[in-house]
Length: 269
Image (cartoon, rainbow, N blue to C red; front, side, top):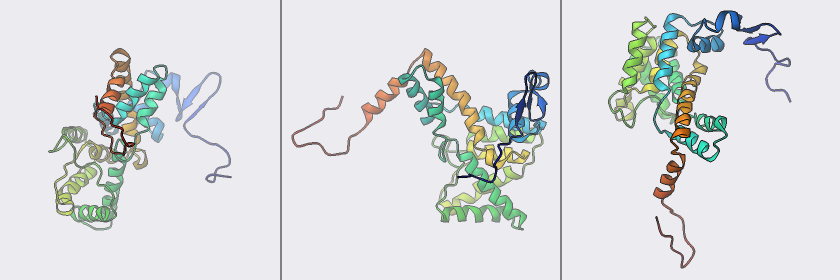
């Protein structure tokens, strides 16, 4: 069985021989090591192009913004995995990253796709406000989540939003997607029935799409950033373990809603 059309494996990312390693057309040892930041290197590997100053600024800012997020489910999964398998750091990191779905970490990609649809409508002749309202209405009708809006803690705008937008404006980034993000924010109350303010998951595509970052790679930004955050939590877990405490609290607070055999009672505590 053949998947896709390729019959010969090909890659433009890396090649090597006994003496030289080439990554995206650059000598790794002579040009890149010591000559490029990791953020710039990530952009180069992903796109095949060195990041412009504008792209480097907003990509770096986005990675910083999303790396740490407290004891969210992905972090708890990592810490509990390490508690159960302290010799498997890689497994604990994987446990956290495997939760990168539409709700956690994947929301940036979903928001980016929404913005892309708004931009397509604008190019077809709609005003930005009409385009935003039309796309939000269509997504609601299809029961698709309006990702990147609303936050359980930050009821006004997520403070990371304005921080990222400020970086983008400072470095002269194309602001069309920031404008789209804000137009969507303005359209939401009339369509959804309540205000949902921008959060960081919408701010990330708003600034990155403005520097030509690939739409399909948007989910990779929070995944890469959160990997760094997970490693920090796992280092702390090794020094100050709470993985079993997290598990204990879940077991303590859980309520059994099933039936019990006749004559059996289960005491809590």
